[in-house]
Each structure stands twice: as structure tokens, then as C-alpha cells.
Length: 238
Image (tube, rainbow, N blue to C red; front, side, top):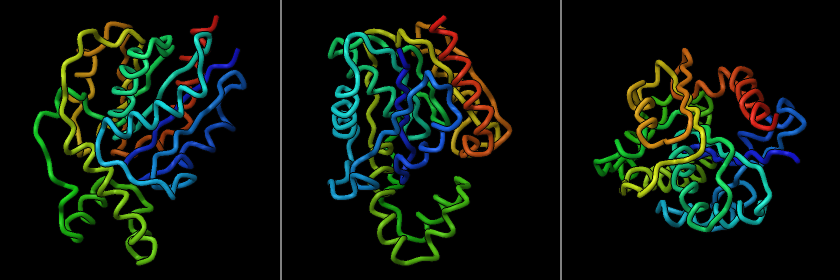
């Protein structure tokens, strides 16, 4: 039986950021790149600005792909990591089998998100500066094309609002799945301690993997990350 890997994108991104991973994952791992509302194949859907709404929509998609016998894992980068955390509890509440593994990338532990932020309200120039600070190389190209920028900005504001207004509520049980947290040592949006803090929320095995990069180390070290995913998931089927 194949392991289904559900990959949740970061703010402003669509499912396409994960599609080429399928070429490099083991044949026994089936990638399911999650599409968020308002972009890609779901460009006609209304954007979500609330964690509960977006988790509900993703849960609907995921639940259509798994049953009581399915083996699956979840991966999320940045905002996708926060969504992955809440999605786990939605799946457990609905009595699904726990994921074989959860991969969290470039995302600080939810219980450290204690202050409401307002980056989604920033005026255009300050919002541009914030986005460019994350270091995604395509950001400059977006701002050079007005048509692309007009399409992109509402998406990024909506996604930022999900993270900015997130209200952490302590769960009754810790995450029972094993977890790997991936972090860039030069990520200026979070610290190594912010990544390590995920361990406090997990009762399963926990690993922290560091990469010499910024917030989007996931692109610079794609081969290493895919090798780790392959090794981790295949080891659970032996």
C-alpha cells in the first residue's frame, strides 16, 4: 500500500510548489499537493482568512483521499506548518488513523504565537519589504508585474491574516505521531528555539533538522529534504 503524503504550501503559494517532488519520491510514496482556496486550481474559490475555515476546507479534501486503512503523512512549510498542526487535530477528532509522520518546515511552534500581529494590514510598500525579507527569489518578479501583483497581494494578505490572527488553544493530548521539524539556521522570521519548541507538543518521536539557509531553505536543500522524507516514511513500512 502506498503512503499518501499531503503537502500544504506556504503563504501566497499554490500546490504547484510541490508537484515536481513526485519525480524524486520513492514509488511507494504518493504525493498529494494540497491546493488552498483562491489560487491554482481553486482560483475561483473565496480566499480564507481564518485558521478554522482553511482547516475545514483542507480536511474535506484530505478526508476524500483516505479511509480507515490508509497510511499517510502530512508536510507543511511556514503557514502550511501551522495548518498541518490544526489539521492533525481535526483528523483525530473525526476518528481517522493518526499520520505515520508529520513534517513541519520553517514554522515556529504554535504555542509561541501568542501575540496578535497585523502584517496583513501593512501598506503596500511595507508589505513588499516584509515579503522580500523572507528571501523568496520570485518575489521581485511578482512586484515588477502589476497584473501579477494585483492577483498575488490579496492572496498574501489573506494568508498572512490566518497566521497573524491565530489564537493558540492548548490541546488535551499531545500529537501522537512522530514529527520532524526542519529549520533554516539563517531564517530571520524565527529562531532555532522556535523550531525546537515543537517538541513540547509531541508525545511521539521528535527530530530537529537544521539547514544552512533562510526561510526558503526548503528550495535550496530540496534533494536533502526529499531524501529525508523517503528514508523516514519507508522506514515505517518495514
